Amino acid sequence: MATSDRTHDERDASGRPSETGDADALKDEAARRSGIHGWLDGIRATRTGRLTLKIVIGVIGSVLVVAGLIMVPFPGPGWLVVFAGLAVLATEFHWAHRLLQFGKRTLAAWTAWLGRQGWTVKILVILAAALTAMVIVYYGLKLSLHIDLIAEARAFLGR
Image (cartoon, rainbow, N blue to C red; front, side, top):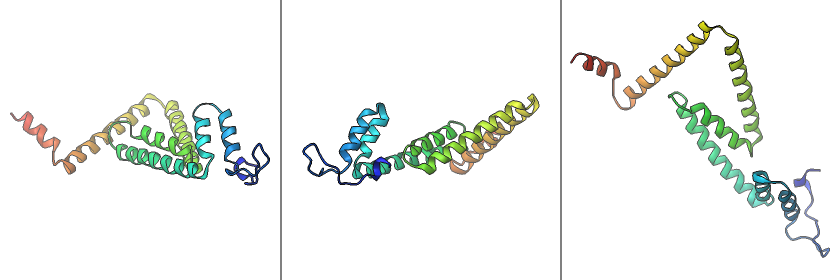
């Protein structure tokens, strides 16, 4: 039987029914675990702690995932931040754990595939990634800040 499935009919040391239900037993069990896991288990020992932890983890993980997805098209650590957000979410949500495992498997398969390819394919992949990054930066600057890099380069070279 899972720890959270226990009935609330537990008794304290004097034999009276415990006012805190199974929270004391869960806290004692959590104290035996060390590090962050024991601390998180201690928070999860009460209904309020469980709900608060889910909300806090959900907000922090979601902010990281959204920020990472915004950063993906730009040069930088976009996918790393997405995976970090999923790792945070995976501490409390099973669906995030499954999605993180899928992402890890997909990345490992892509890396293995690319490793088996010859130099020409590797160079083409690098060139495609660089071209994609340049197009994203160009249109990002042109549409958001109204800076046309090609026109600026022509003006600079025409001096």
